[in-house]
Structures are given as structure tokens and as C-alpha cells.
Length: 364
Length: 160
Image (cartoon, rainbow over all chains, first blue to last red; front, side, top):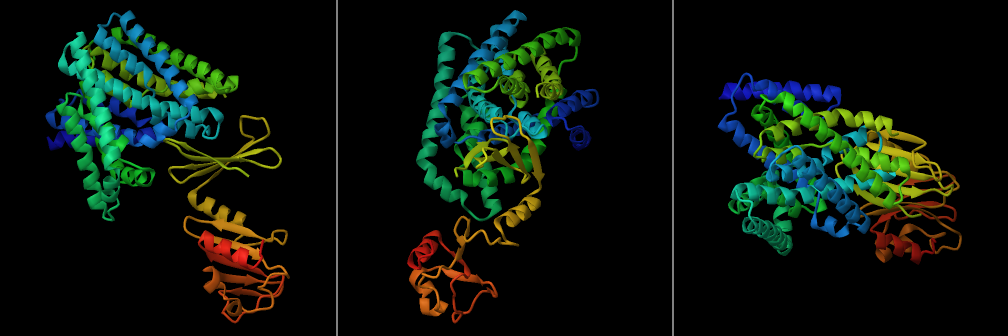
């Protein structure tokens, strides 16, 4: 077991080095590393557990990007933009899924895969292309962050439905009720306990602080799992309600090393799980999904940009910035009953990560 | 001058303001500590130029801009506001009660809570001046304190 783990970590090290050198998203490189490793080692229980931990830490740090304050501060323009983005891309993904002959459940997952763009990959491109100060960037990052909140809700509902295994009205209603109940309940409790949380987090010792944060994360993850909603969603919500600005950076600092380690194993495990038997079939589907993914976001950017009075070129750039997909899409695809969806999603994420910089150069 | 402040999640903070000439200056402070300064010409949406600085370089540049190394004559006053403290450079006019008396005689700290940490004149440059230092019209004092204390100091000794 230790041998397998050391092999995985060594390959990850090489992968990270390569990604850094090529200025590529490490997510894609890690998945490819997993696909290569598939030929040498089996997917073990230990890797599965670490991957689960990675998913939770990853969603926890994505959740950190928000706070209830931020949601309250969001301007109307941003809410309208976020809603438009969801209304265009979720149905587009679902229709595309149905068009490809998937079952309803898989098509719903396809909707989420196509909808969510990766905040972290996008941020990297924006920084690399020196777009941070441009007018469309404020919209791009805000939309992307709110998207994560919507996707988390969506993911919770999908995971709940997959867990209960039924698609009837009552089953879905129950899942919806549980999800909303969990979000509202945890939110309310966090607001009520805010002064206590703040005092507990102000402890000077890093050790005490770290253990508090991880214990809090696990408690919410366990609660979510008990409700049948997937632990990762609980972790996301823990990140959402935990921080205020003063603590956010400290939380990020202590959690980041663990997240980077376990998230890397999380992405490798996707490579290890991938079915490679129907590659040719998957390639055609991937081509269509990629087309949908690119044009859906270009159209979204155009509509939003014109609506908030950005210039034409800024509107195109907004669309391009929203193209990269990433961790959330892969997490969603991992839930799909049809295994080829994961393959298609991984190919899509890889291709879009390579395509986005080219498009960014094109629309300057 | 109004400075607009926006958080860019995943990137950092964005500060922007418009200059008298109508250009927009935009400073991005990245999470990593890197800084970028964008200069936009009036009614342009792509930057005319971008300056990139490391954290250390940005601090050095900031110190130069704020006048740590050289204070030109054109400027009578300058101020530096930090989280807890304010430091202000103030020129002492002839009509100020400070003129012609020592720091001690003016009871500056006792009356306002602010402290004079340096004193510059045409011929003098005194860091941490002792209580018996005499203040003359035309001197520049550097005063430190909480914002309210510095304000009280300015009001009491007619330094506006």
C-alpha cells in the first residue's frame, strides 16, 4: 500500500512540476497522471478515502470565497448576470445530455457540468493575461463565485437524488426539502453562533485554530452525509458560514497545504476510475459537449455584457473568461450513473483548459 | 478624490481612482502580494500601460511616493493613515499658537494626546525633538497619534 501511495505521489510531483513549467492548470495534469497510473496500480480503499478528504477540503476552500455578507452585498447587476448564466447554460447542458441519448439523471448532471466554470482556473488565466483591472473581470469573478453557490445547491440535490435512487416527485421533494433545510438551518445557526465562533477562532495558537477549523468542517460534512446530501456539500457550507474577512486568510493559510495534497489525490483518483473502453464513442460526444460549452458561455458573456453596458470586445472577453471548467464539473460527473460522462467531462475540462488561452489571445 | 474598492475573489483587491486629467489609475493587490498598476487613458477600456511590482518593490515605491525620502516644498502637509495611527506632516503658520514656544510650553501631548516625532525647518532637522525644542513659523512638524488626537492637535493649534 505504501508503495502504491509513493508511486502516486511521485507521479503527482512530476505532474505538478510539469504543470508549473507549462503554466497549465494542475487539475488536468493530475487527471492525466491518474489515467497513466491506471495501468500500474488498482484503485484502492485508501486512495478513495484520501480522495474524499480532498473533495471536502477543495469545496471547503471554494466555500471560503463567500460569506453571508458577500451575498448580501452583491449588486442587482451581479444577481441578474448570475441568473442569466444559469438560465442559459443549465438547460443547454441538460438538452445536450438528452440529445446525446442519456437518461434524465445523467442529463441533469450534464447540465451542471456545462454550467459551472472553474473560478480557480479562470483566475489564473485572468492574472496571466493581465486582465485583472479590465471592466469585465469584476463581472467574471463575481458570476463565477455565485455560480459555485448555485452549483453547490444543485450538486446537493443531485447527490441526494442519486443517494435515494428514485426519480419520483416525493423522493425529489424530500431531497429538496432536506437540502434547503440544511442550508437554511446551518446558515441560521451560524448567524446565531457568530459571536461564539469569532471568539473561538481568535485563539492565538495555530494548532488550536487548525483543529477547530477541521473539526467544524467535519461536523458539517458528517451532518450533510447523515442527511444523505454528500459530505463535500457539508464542507462547502462550512466554508461558506465560517469566515469573516479577518479570519478567511488565516483559515486559507492553514488549510491550503492539506487541500493541495489531498485534492491532488482526488484528481488522480478520477483518472484511476476512468473507463477507457469506449474512447472513440466518447470523443464524438466530447466534441459536441465542448462546442456547447464554448458557445454557451460566449453567448452568455455577450448577453450579460451588453446588458450591463460593457463594450462589444469586453462582452466577448467576459464570455471567454467563463469558458474554463474544472473541479466542480468533475465532482458532478463523478456522481453520474453512466460512467462515460466522467470520461467526456475530463476530456472537456482538458480541452477547454488548452483552448481558453488561445481564445483569450484572439479576443484582445 | 474617491477611491473605489472592489474585491476580486481568487485574485485579490482592486483599487481605482480617476486623476485630474481624467485618466483612471487602477491598482491590483494580488493575494500573492504581487501588485499591478494599470493606467487607462480617458474613455479607454484597455490599459495604456501596466506596471508590475513584487511586494517588496511596491512597499519601496509607496514609501518614495509618500515622501519618506524627500518632501518637496510645494507640499505643506502630508498624511499617512494606518489602521490605528495617523502620521501627519504639518507646516506651522505664523499665526499658530505653537510659534515661538517650546513643545513643553505648548503642552501638546497633555492637551491633545498627539506626539511630535520630528521637526524640519530651513536650517534644522530634529528627529524625536526634546520637550525644550522651540517651534518657529515655517517649520514642518511630523505628528503621530490616533486620528482623533491628530485632529485635536490641528484644531487646537490652528494648523489647517
